[in-house]
Image (cartoon, rainbow, N blue to C red):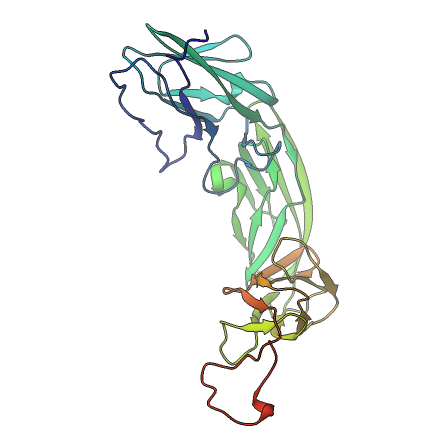
Length: 329
């Protein structure tokens, strides 16, 4: 129907996680129009759903309860119908969608809102993940012989961990299964295996080797920029920016993301204590250290400011002196 009396209902897709509630939306007004816009809402919490998968669309594992909510204005009564790709129909507002009803991959749920003036249709996109590992499991020593983990899977709803010391964590759902921690009784070399499954299949498994030395655990003790006003530091483009780096545990590799954009700009076998930024901006560098399958990361809490220009730059407490007290920005 093309009548302007019916426009669009606002539809959102959200996960039914603790602390997340569907929006109630405005009460229907006295007019006959339906107004709004729509878009999926990424899940909060640990990454049991991946908002970056399939472009900008959030993705969900199968058999996951998502809440569909329409916020509409229009002359009552309003009816809400959600049509699924397989022909199933959900009635009401809000409704709970079991993603197990949808096939793996991209899906389009069509919302129909109607009153006596006509109807409006709007597609709501949702991606149901296949069961797979996106990367090897993360094994991070957090202190002594305690290890924090992340399964790095998609499309899974339960995980089981075998720690290589004779102990096994049973099948566990939620963040406790996806990102558990474990404490070993003694240093040594352990093979850690994580299994993942969903309501549609599995399990799939992947293993990694964890080496716990008798010496200090791998860890970044300090990663900071050096200046008189630290942590608030300003340097000129092209100027050498000094850093203080202290790491325990004998890392095998140092990865420096100087720009803080998630891309490692420099890989070294030892400490790199300075960097030159060629252009102005604000940068939050990040350091990653690796030893076997163990890693640790640290980033500056306050960005480094890099300025351009040819004027003279003084510290806030500068009261005079010779040119030795001056520097170019």
